[in-house]
Length: 106
Image (tube, rainbow, N blue to C red):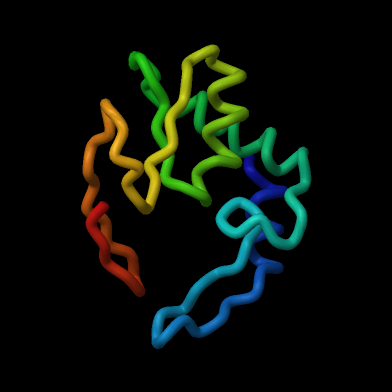
């Protein structure tokens, strides 16, 4: 199960991001190109383990977009992207987030 995904992760380079080891992989960075078979494997896995009793799928910009779109299409549930900056439009909700190498509030 997930053999193509596992193999692609094992082949992925890791770079130093200000003391934080950062894996470069198509699902998180869009480089190198995403193999559609791997994306199918990931979406199948998400559907098999997830609870999607929801009105909307949300995903962080930009790394979540390649997963949110096919998941939305598969499940027929709308999606929204959590943006790094505010546009000041009605319905926006501010979000505070922290990664291994940055922290920000929107």
